[in-house]
View 1 (cartoon, rainbow, N blue to C red):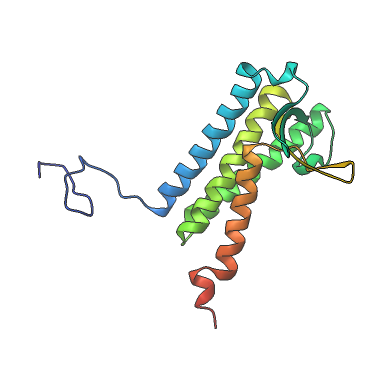
View 2 (view 1 turned 180 degrees about the vertical axis):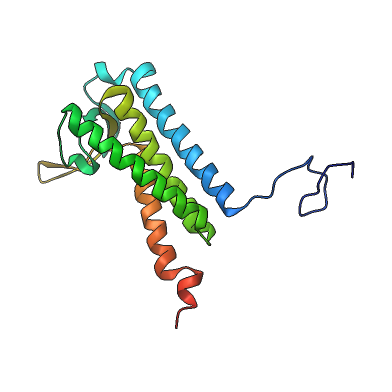
Length: 183
């Protein structure tokens, strides 16, 4: 092994590699979430040109549609006023900072990755709000029963990451290793 170089767990020279800590993994999950979310939105807006299409049928139960969400999750608190948008951004910034502190203090890999997913999704939707004044939503699941079509909320990859992160946090809190050790 050369001077100043470290070895990985297998004893191979890794050129000064840094260990993969839970925090590093959480940061990577946040970055991957953010990149995938923004790349999907940019592709749908600029390449597929979803804004100039009505509905793009992908499967009998899944369509791509463009929806601009000026509210919060599931379209709650719809308000396009500048003061409301600034308030939502302020809440989002505080939430991301609090989640990042929690992620830095997390003791389990699952919780750290889950927090990274939530942070990446929140930042992705925040970028939309800054760039477009609304969050870009595009995924629509639906089902037809007895001639009636039932639609789910229109959502995006950031929303999927946030929901998956919350589900993983719940799993980790109730069924994870620390929970198993509780009396």
